[in-house]
Length: 369
Image 1: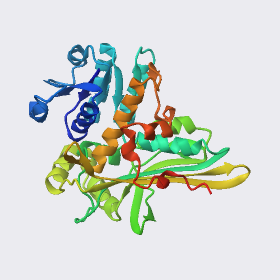
Image 2: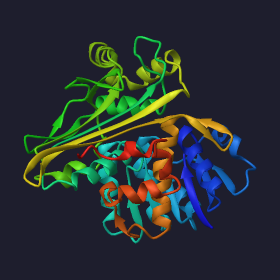
Image 3: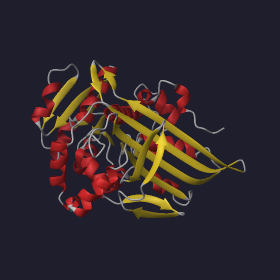
């Protein structure tokens, strides 16, 4: 049985713990700087807890000795500290960050590492990249690759048409930081919350707009190989306009703690959510201009006797699937590993990746005909 450290005992971290322990293959050390967050896990079989500061790489590294891997579910601001601690402890490293700057540091740490560094293992970046890369490989020549992901309330009831489903810090960060894209064959940055579009799926209208970090390493992988590549977050119509007013007109992009306080005290959380994954790829195949699409919806469900939200299931399920593949020797054991290095069929066949499989398996088939 392998020992894995999970850093951060929040919504996603606690779900990772439940999945790993429930599998019977792992024992888990849960580290969080808030002792109160660890209380629900104390005394559980095959679970050890440690309350300590996470921003001290040396202290954390000492606590991580003997761990096979570190799954970092802490806020994005702590990504580099935890990655450095994992390297010093000689453990494999996986995280969920969408923060571009932090991921660059992780890549640098992986350059001479004796263990694997696999950042961005969540939903987006993460699974969305795996699905997009799988479609892209079907083409002789790529034209356009469009990635769309949304974690939405099933029953929106406020002006934002939104409920808090995961990290408030993460939402604000992706709404504020510049976005990577390939436009007319050129790699460039685009502003967040811009280039809004509308589309319909199953009779429901959505909007999508630029947000930061969702592409992971895909921009650099496809640089020079695709005409257009972009990632946008899906919301219900009207959300982007209100967020732009808050961030720009009220200047809350420069007062993020104020915005966080407003959102967390005014916008309720919900467990009744849906995650939408929508990838479209077009290009030349066999001399014809073709398009293929992957679309999937994941809903909240019960795991281990407790209802987990769709964003908890998809994010935690994704990183657990990658960890499982690493433990089974199906991924390289050293250096930097991209999400593009993970096969979609292998991912979906994994016991944790199966949470992405819809009830109707035929929905996974690309519309290639």
